[in-house]
Amino acid sequence: MKNTTDPLDLASLEESTFRSRYDDGLLDLLAGLALLAMGLSIGTEMSGMAGVWAALIFPMWLGLRQRLIEPRTGYVEFAPERRAKLRRTQIILVLGGVFTLLGGVAVFVMTNREAGGPGIMKQLGPIPFAIALALPALIGALLLGVHRWFVHAGVIVGLVSAGHVLDLPFRLTLSTAGAIVLLIGVVILVRFLRAHPVPELNGHGTA
Image (tube, rainbow, N blue to C red; front, side, top):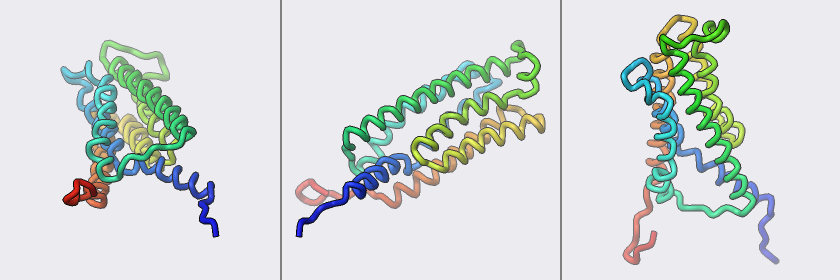
C-alpha cells in the first residue's frame, strides 16, 4: 500500500512549527527589557534614550535566537508560501516596532514639563501612549496566535491607566509593566532551555 501523508497534516505541522518560533520566551524577554529601559529612562538624564531603546534591543532577537534556540531545535526551511507569510508578518511587526519607537518619543515629549497638550490629551495623560506601546503585542498576538502577548498588552495598558488614575509616576508604572513582561519572558525562556538541551555530539561530530 502506498504510504502517503495528508497535505492537510503537512500544512498543520508547518503551521505549528511556524508558531513555535515564538514559544521560547526570547522575544517576550527583549520586549520587557525595552519597556523597562524606556520606563527607567523617563525623567532622568537618559530621557533622550526613552524612544530608542526598542530600536536598539529588538534587533538582538535574530542573533540570540541563532545562538540559543536553533542549536536546540534545529533550523526549519519553510515552503515558499510560508516564507512569504513570514516576510509579511515581519514587515508588520517592524512597522509596529517603529510605531512603538514613535510612541516612546511622544511619551518623552508629552511628559516633558515644558511640553503641553490640548484638553483631552492632558486628561488622558500617558494612556494613549501606553496603547501605542501595546499595539505591537496585540498585532503579534493576532497574526501569530501567541495568546500570552494579549496579557502583555493588558499589563502595559492596565498598569499605566491605573497609575494615571492613582496619580502615580508614569516612569514607575511603565517600568513595572516592563519588569513583569521581562519576568514572564525569563521564566518561559529558562523552561525552554531546560526542556531543550543542546544535543551532545557523538564521536563522528554529529548529534
